[in-house]
Image 1 (cartoon, rainbow, N blue to C red):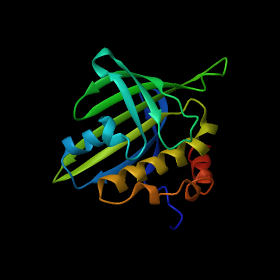
Image 2 (cartoon, one colour):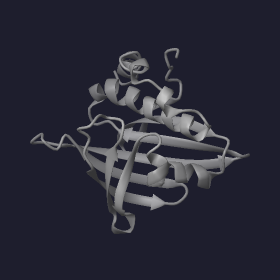
Image 3 (cartoon, rainbow, N blue to C red):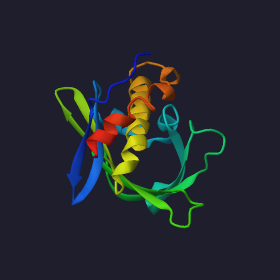
Length: 173
């Protein structure tokens, strides 16, 4: 594979907070893309799986491609307006005395048979962009592969990091 480029990412200010935002497009109905990013079985093809009852406002989410040590962590559903909007919060680095909360936003829109996905993560620490950016580029490219008949396993993490790290350092400098 050639080195991926991050032409589908940007720095955005949303509600007074700084986010890194990614855009992907799909020739598919909005409901189909919504299912790909919310249904556990569909998520499992490209990122992870969840368990629990979303109606309770929290599920447990486990990354499937982060090695054997990946745990199912709580994911709070802050806002959900199917099939257009999902805001969630998850806590990473549980062992750290000051764990880090990740605020994630997903917005979908559809026009002329094309669904646009905008995915954003709040970056309270701009230095984190060098790892967060390539990570989401990697996973969102896996999503595109899964949804367009490709094989997500052909998307190689080593093609993304450290190759895209400087792009994100510059974006958030």
